[in-house]
Length: 164
Image (cartoon, rainbow, N blue to C red):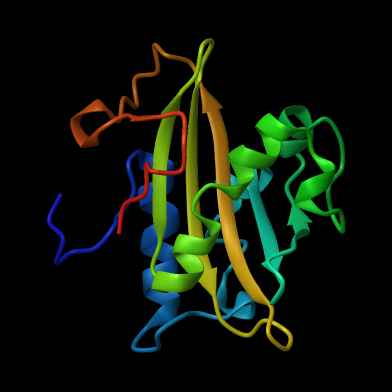
């Protein structure tokens, strides 16, 4: 991956979402939540969440797509990440601080026993007070997926699968 180009995504969905983030950001450091066009991301809305991280590091779902209920075990809007079981909380925590600290999109693929977790974290400007907003995209894909990210690298199990 060309470091000068920045992180552009590891699969087709990630590349489309990152391209939209860049297009609405323009010349600013970060796009705001209101800049994100749900219509442009229509195909991915079920897998998108927006997480707010406060100045204490507490993360809370502001928005959680309907497709995430199956992964998370229920509706998460308004709920804290710490309310999830450990594995799921770790899945969503991946890259949150890196995206906020670096002010760039980060993402990766985690090889799991039965599937792969493709995750994406895009920082957003305009959080209330000291809070930061992060647009998240999370999907579980079969190991046999034709949208295979192997040429870009498979990351194993932990948050070290960050790209910037």
